[in-house]
Image (cartoon, helix red, strand yellow):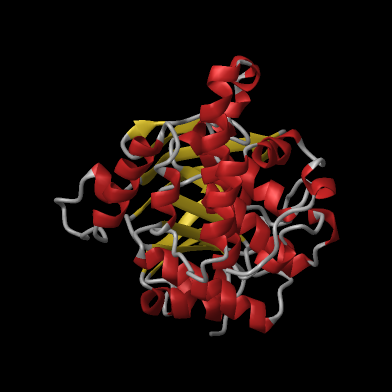
Length: 335
């Protein structure tokens, strides 16, 4: 990966990067890794995170994820083979029922599409799963644990991350700073660790590792050249890449992508698809909301169709395309 060291003016923008600059040894190691010319996959980022105090835990989670095989469709399927399980979710806003008794699950290591016409309840379902809003009834299980109604930051700590239809970022911070802030449970978040001299050393070592990992993540998404640009100046497509990078930096087991290809050009769409398939090969699980039927049918081995808040169909893309109810509700009567 290429790129010069950060200037003093850039690092003064936040306390986070200022801390990184104060530790010359950590910075030197991080810059040496970054300029070595190697390109790391998400699996390669594991070695950098092991330098943190919580590295052993991160490595165990990654190992479990890489070793998990796609779930079998037999009756012997276990909770670990279906990390996400939604049962009878219901949510109403006033007199309008947005999600009506929706139930489905997602197999480990799969690329699953969630489709439906506008107003079908797809984004509301995402919000219910990730804790953005609480359901009126129903249950969400993730890796066998009931996470129903947990706030978003706690859901993310369980290993379930998401992106939004409209990409969100910290506009006044640099791209690099946005990615460095994403990992949770950083030692520097503790006041006493940040101020006590004997504790600051471990904080600096951890931030050095986070810096290395952030550069590797930016390089993976081909936006390392934008590292020192303010996130608010990015184009729509670049913001999509940054949001994807931020979500991946939380070290998730599963990613929920809400219309990740909306508003991006065909070249960027191809790049995003390439990243998704590469990450899936590493053991990540995906649930994707998307309106482009061809894209879903060509890339997902399983498709869940919602209509008026309910799950209308759940099957392989070839079967979905021949489902008369889906054709009538979603495709307008023609394929």
